[in-house]
Every structure is written in C-alpha cells, then in structure tokens.
Image 1 (cartoon, one colour):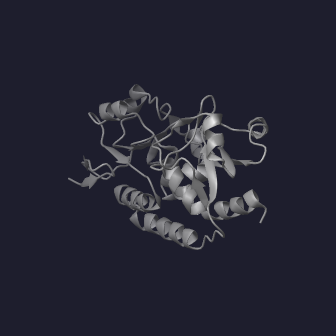
Image 2 (spheres, helix red, strand yellow; image 1 turned 30 degrees about the vertical axis):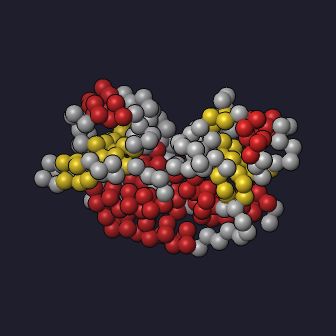
Image 3 (cartoon, helix red, strand yellow; image 1 turned 90 degrees about the vertical axis):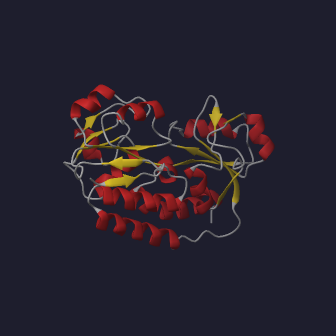
Length: 263
C-alpha cells in the first residue's frame, strides 16, 4: 500500500494510484493541469479560476473556506489535495475520515519546489513535475533586481486594512521581487490602521488584486492620505499562487520593479 508524507508531516495511505482527484486550492488546481492531468480531476473550488476550461466545466465543491462536504463525498474521490493555510482545519479533519487528504504547507520558494515534486509523485507525473521545478528555478535565477529593497506594505484587505507578516509566502515573494516588507516582524495577516502605516513611512504601497479586489479608485482614495508614497495595483496571483504560475512570476516582478520606480 503506497504511503506518502505531506508537508505537515502526516502519513497518507492509498490503496492505488489516485485517479479521482479533488483540489481545494486554486494554485494547486492549476498545477494539476500543468502536470498533464485532466479527467483525473473531478472537483475544484469556485475560486479555481485557472485553467478557464476547468473553471467552466469541472464540478465545484464550494469555496476554500466553505467546502461542500456532501458534494465532495458524493463524488467519491480517492484523493483530496488541500493546504494548511487556505483550508479550514476542522473541515479537512472531517474529510480525512473518509478520503486520503494530502496537505501542502508553503512558506517560501523551496517549499514550492518540494510541493510540486511530491504532488508529481503522488499523481504519477513525476517527470512533468521535475520539468516545472527546473523551469521555475531557472526563471528565478535569471531575475535581477537592481538597487536596495524598497520599504513597502503589501495590502490584501480593506475595512479593516490587512497586510502580510514575515511568516507568509507573500513575504518571501516580496523579498525576491525587491521589496522590503515593513511588517515582516509580525505574524500572518495583521490588521493595520492608516496611522500605523504612516508611522512606517512606506516608499511603496502595493494593493493586491486578491483576496480583496483593489481597483484604481482605492488607489486614488489612499493616495490622498499618502501624497508622497507610490501606490500601485499588483497581481495577487503572482505573489501568492505557489504552483506552476510561478513560471511567470520572475518576469512580472522584474517589470513591476521597473514600473514602481520608473527605471
């Protein structure tokens, strides 16, 4: 009986190689497609927007935080791929009673590479996974960011404003992209006030496209309170999706850095 260890240290047992898979993490759903799976993936969440054909045609099993347990069990999967941060612990523990669940736990680029390789082994696409990891590694090795890191705040939510701490994957991507996270001493996703942010005197405020969909109007509103700070909209998927989408992240970070400082 095959036994795999997930990124939380749990042992996951299988009677056979999984061919009825449900992914409850958007970035890992896209990864499964890029590994060469299709019919094997029978369920995704309503936030799994990539690839578009899957989003249109695959069965939705709720959101990442509100899984439809009844629908998942009805589909009779032989594997659920989840994530420690994105999914609710109690829901995953309930699923584990009936279905093998493999859980990722990703905080930096090394965790990503390990996760992709392990999922590749798990679904019988090890060679494809190694190829994706090799290309991700090559693309990041070619990323050259000039000058010192800019003092920055990455904002993920409004009312209240929320940013990212130093123990997050987004923080790791900020560092690689040339941005110093002003709130890296804090944990997870702290709430912040405008007053607290002003006290940090940021050179740059990055408003993410997700989970809150910041738009230009939000830039304009915040700019009134930070007249000397550059405020821009950024693609949240490039900073927070830790699957094959990272193939495109280095070029995005390079162009973003140039845009931020008109270089």
